[in-house]
Length: 526
Image 1 (cartoon, one colour):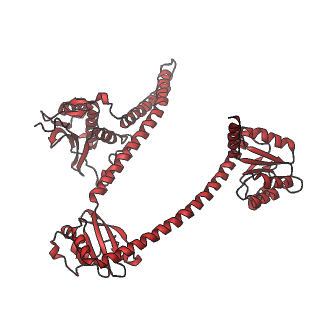
Image 2 (cartoon, rainbow, N blue to C red; image 1 turned 180 degrees about the vertical axis):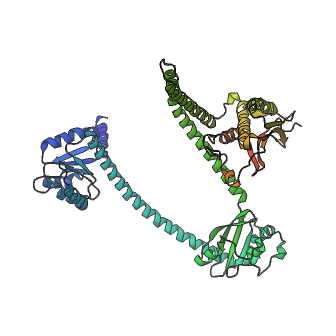
């Protein structure tokens, strides 16, 4: 066990790196060795350049530290020789004078990694040596990755060549089995067509292709361009991959937009022919789902970030509030001081409210807080709280349309009430000159219940709709909103398995509807 332990320790020491020190002063060598002992590197020394070069051949160091001025061969010449013999070894110049010309010469001739001035700072010296070893390791890893990449490129090239051979062989086999190919062609559910490249004429199409064009298979023409037959266009579709496929002789893909739908079109040319098989896949719903998934992941990530930031800010905010309040109670404070302290306290309280919103945004509902509850009662309770705010706004009317007897929903009524308040507050801020009407209603739609907030405000421009649920996004003037209200509401609704629906018209108002699922045991109740 002792021998194995010693071998492991020796290997670990070697793995930490080999360092060569060259200086004509023994005291400096001893000092540097003493400073670098903490790194546990394998260190050897030399008192002149000639001895250093002999040690270099035997020791093969990864990092070399050399004094600038030495008898015989100076540091620049020595490190130049080091560069020739060990190109990857990192070279560090130790100099006691600010000789700019010598430094420029060293950089040009031997590509010095770092300079260390005498007297040195121990921490800086250790950090520089560590950086040199890391740089050496990086070069070594880059060389290894380059070799691996070359090998993988060769393998990939071979695989590509094999794949091209197989495609060519399969194309020839399909040509010799025309009858079987035709039968399979018509049985495929993916829309397919054989298209002549020079004029985009449809030579043959399957049943699925005819269904996309809303025609029977017997109506498939022989010389009508595919873009005219399928999409009613007079010119080729933008993004069509057919020209590229015919030019390269290989399959190509492209995306075509038509009538509000998105199609991924793939073109596969016949070998030695002016025709290609084109496939059409409607990816409109797939893209919409992908966008929703991306939005969900983005909101989750932002929520985690918001929670972390809020926790970090909360403690210093508490200190600011405490000290400002204590200072305002001191006797003898002038009126200006008290006014300034009051402004500090008000600003800190405003920051505290923003932090609390961030914490609510990042926090999921606790399981123990969830239960079955009456959605209309929850919405009514939120409306009661909101009416208190409307006492100072006599020109704003709040109209309730709450439906009785709705199936109970499962969740946290406290956080859902917060969603109602956020939507009401958002609608109130959209009313021009604090004048207009807010409507709050509940109801059922299929296996979902819903509550909706409608306002007669300014509405939302179409360009802003994709961003309204993003944290910190707001169209309100500075100081009138943080942009967190809808983000928090979105997170709470999503956490309850619900969805948002936004209907808006600029200049007429907006309607925010939140749909919540009815529990399975209750969804069939009237």
